[in-house]
Length: 444
Ligand code: PFF
View: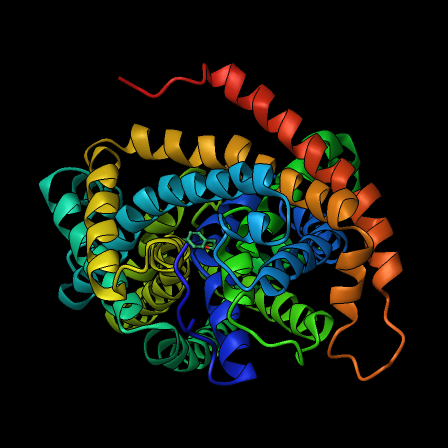
């Protein structure tokens, strides 16, 4: 490995904005509504909130600890801490990132296409048919390229000048636009049915389906906090020792949850007010149901631009974090320049994403492989590393930057070793069962 001056965040707010930007993504606006809809509406929300507080937050701190203590990318962090064999865990994080970003960028491309479609009103006549046409084929490949180009452009500018500057603008824009849309959605006649669906849990449905709702909620909490990709390890490697990881972690988790719930306050009233069922599960959910509702509203075009504009900003502020994981590894490890690295990896990711842009089944398979296997496995291994290998060192790391105030470090370590480990292991097992059911293999 080559020694040289490593980049850092310019400000603490910069680190928080970048992490929130990463966390708030398609997971909040695309995945969260359809996960909620397929897992019993409000019942899912309750379990999800618990999963974020108990599992997500503790696992987030685990990634932060590894990143800050090592001050290096996800692969070299482990040898740096004195455990060279664990670099395989870092490599798995990189691999997961590759799989996810390849199809995430395809969806990002759909979003760009939908912004244009909102300007011209192209999808208003037949939203479902429109989705069918634009989601696959040459156009989808082209827009996937555009999305990847934007991602590469920001990352190439650097940690401070690119990611930090961009996310400091992107995150407030997402919140402002989303609050505006939620306020508008509240004025629609029939919105109340949407709130009801989202916010009044049906305890009966919940208890009857706990076995599937819990893993879905834990999986969603991990995905939404950007865990299991090495992102939070990488981002924390750019911060200093004077920062309080606990406070930063709480702010990031709370903010991300707030935006997820806010997305529900936009999507569900909008759908219910127009009598559109939220149950259309799968990748197309938001792209069919939301446009169907928009088509029936006066000012639908403007609303569409705002809605898909938010989705695009959210997706970009996440994709840059994933690309940074890989770029940071190559830059740290081989001392190659950031710009050529970002471009080269962008090209590789673009190529890897082409099958998903040509066939939605591929995209679904890649998503299912990542979410059911790669991501929980990576989180489980990082949690095991922090819980049992770093152990007390991890608690000391959490205590840094706390001005001598007694910390909850020991309680956190205990939680990591018990609840978090068991919940993530359970999610992995159920994920594997799900994969086994669909036959593991990619569609050919
Ligand atoms: N937290 C992100 C989200 O909810 O969309 C997860 C993520 C996925 C981050 C893909 C980055 C990424 F490229």
